Image (cartoon, rainbow, N blue to C red; front, side, top):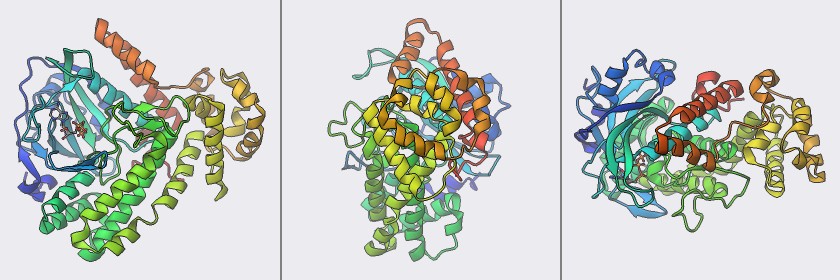
Length: 478
Ligand SMILES: Nc1ncnc2c1ncn2[C@@H]1O[C@H](COP(=O)(O)OP(=O)(O)OP(=O)(O)O)[C@@H](O)[C@H]1O
């Protein structure tokens, strides 16, 4: 058991905690596809609830849950009072496809030393929203954590941002690690050089094994460069998914550059760089068009936390490639979503022009991606689309010519009945509210379940998600 990687990292990184005892456990969502990938697919529903709701240890896994310690910049202000305040690391498992070390972490599982007076709970609406966001992002090819389990707990909660009292749940999330940028920041805050070196060794061994053999002085900048490259791809994939995360604080960014923590997220209705998701983001710091900038700012904080192991110039240099990596990843991500083959450096300009046109025309974001899928192969669909007027505008003609010059990467996909529908599989805020309303007012989960199925179907047809594309690390690999 002590060979579980997190235990080998040592007790200075976490606190052992007790899960809450809930009055009820009603299983609402079980992610069977990913359960199979981590060898938990054979659990009966009863055993599932014992583990994912009562948190009885998984055989041979963590004997007690661990609340992980971290700090973070929230809206650019440093907060040393963070840490898992309503969650913990429950277990570490392996992806049977590629042996990645994955964490089962919770949200809403009770108070911890980091709860700061909070109740340690998650509202059911918050849990439902996290499931929907993770499923939609996975379907659109974003490297994301998975919502693994959602269990309603029979409690009622008071919240200032939801009608109260409201129903409660406990969520289990499957993540490629829970080492946040803020996990490193906390060590820097305490001047813990030995701890920083230890955490870096853990992160390299588990997530960047190619960097493990490097001497420490070279490892820190190489790690920062690698995190930066992957984070550039993540930011680009959010853009191509039309996703606004909403709260890009350093405690919400992982060193594996896996997207996670779905609170006030939204999918864009239309391209608008200033579109914000969180009602409390008064300055638009985390607006759609500022997400790459936010990620880079956070990377520079991660760099600052690595200073004890390197020097400022070298670490700054490690981040210099971010803007180019982001531009290139943006082209990869949009071309993948559009089902087109990239040809060269002009691809980036094409994506920028496409975004400019989408903004000016006001065409719905997901509708346009759907209508333009596979470029010229979709010309007839474009003409009969509910959004056909946008493509008939003169301003679209020069873009259409460039679009139609690209070859389709997956034209066979157009034969799927999904592409005979007039509208895409979208997830607007209005729809999320409608799905929640059915659950809230009549405990009717059918629309939510149908939506999850539809999102998965879309993901499989477009072949952008790891389960259908077969490569979890490079969802936009060329
Ligand atoms: N109801 C609550 N009770 C206790 N702590 C809370 C509660 N809500 C949020 N927190 C804590 O506030 C901080 C910021 O919250 P945030 O919503 O970003 O994290 P989270 O969604 O709870 O967890 P994660 O980042 O793992 O998704 C975290 O330290 C979190 O644990």
